[in-house]
Image (cartoon, rainbow, N blue to C red; front, top):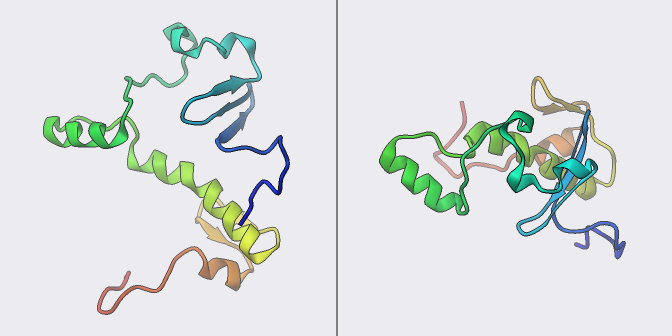
Length: 129
């Protein structure tokens, strides 16, 4: 499936849009609506809203944190929330229509076909109760 449809302004990566502007990044590039953010690696701590230590490899970070019992740089809840837009975009593309997402309950409203795509059938004897 071609997501971009041949449009050069749609590319790999992710764009986060907030009240103060936007940032776009992929594994090697970074762009921002605010020129002051361009040198993000040397951004003073006073301008950082989230202060994380550096990790160049999530798998290594996870293993190191298992050993040290320290929190990982990307908590599971952060990863969960970060993947939701991509999954919902794919569900919207597969169904060919807009979907209505309830953030509080993490459910799709009034669309049983789209809701079914949020999960898959479990193998017997496994079930979610």
